[in-house]
Length: 355
Image 1 (cartoon, rainbow, N blue to C red):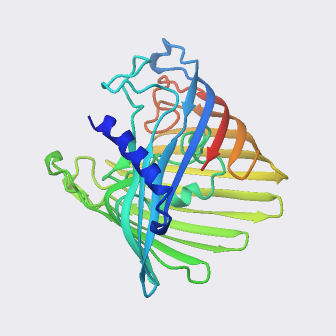
Image 2 (image 1 turned 45 degrees about the horizontal axis):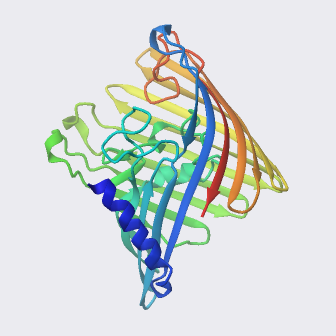
Image 3 (image 1 turned 90 degrees about the horizontal axis):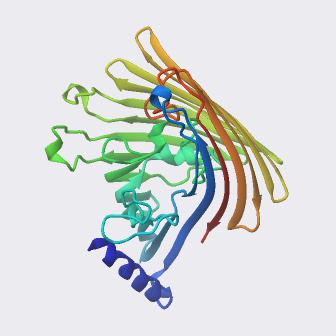
């Protein structure tokens, strides 16, 4: 029933937004559709995972706006929904391709807040500061070749929920005003599921400095759980940044995660881009290593891409990404590869439009 009601609500909001200019409501969205060829040697080596499909990478539509309350204070809001143009929603819990129906509207960032001289405070479902900084150094963000999907950035940049998901539910986030290029952000998440036997209240803090072509940032997150979590306390920190000069840019970050049960995961990448007119060439190299005592598993990842901007809002791109895996490593491109590792790869040609 909800999937039938939501499209009606969105249609009504679109129609109303055209005449409610005084309410300062903006309709925005993102469509990224690509032909993607992927090839993976799955666990046991009995199945060839080569396949070609259409992929709609985090396609979304949303509404955002504000109201001036006077004295420099504003109320702000955002309602963002994700959809998939590559499959049809049958409205009955199934899709036309026989898979589970993920083609209906899914929640993304949805929050209400206040902004003023103090910065802004928002409550609801909100991307973490950790994720936000990762997006700032990936020119392929929200495409089929984005770094968080190909091992250049860790899985802390993906997913949602109240356990250090990149999009954190039941969350309060504060972002400071800009102090001569310095910004600070922090979030605190409330555990909204009392039935799971856990009492996690994750938190995180991050800072960034931006001046001209220089961007540097640092982040820390913790699930704030300790010994009461079956998996133990999970924490992660990272350092990263970007330097731009004329047509060139260099970017990267280093991440170190304590995953509990004596597991430690490090992930890092370095990348560069060259822009000439409306064309950009991107090269990225990354590596990840999972350790437990004297036992470790690792992978190397590589991405090369070209993008042509047809306008400020529309671009086309082609990209190739691959990983060299020593083992089947959870929450990385190596997940589900065979026990001796493998070489999962992706080739994508896509069209991206923002509105």
